[in-house]
Image 1 (tube, rainbow, N blue to C red):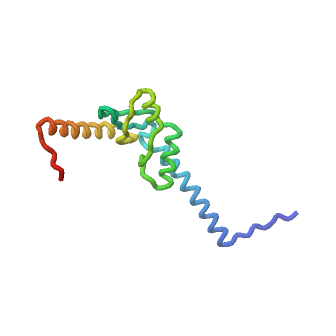
Image 2 (image 1 turned 60 degrees about the horizontal axis):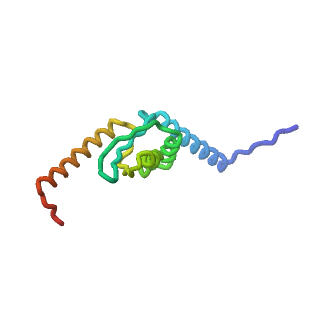
Length: 138
């Protein structure tokens, strides 16, 4: 019994190289996301809608977050970009208060630095209001 002979044409070889390149691209993106430093946690800087108070909220990373990061990496989109963590709805349901996302990061130190900067900006705005500065309409 003779085995069928496989014929490699330039077109088939180009398609094979392209398929291998795409597969390698997908695997490398997954490995980069998996090995990302501080990727075990996800931290949010949020503000309560009713009184404007800032707070930081952190939780462990889940499979859903991994796949969101992965597809953003594969498609060339920024992380977190327009990502809305599912913990927001859960937090609002448990606390009974609406929140606004200001920032999301894997690094809690980055969130705390951003929180301090935002608080100092808020305090300057409040002081300006107490001093009696009249805002101009320009």
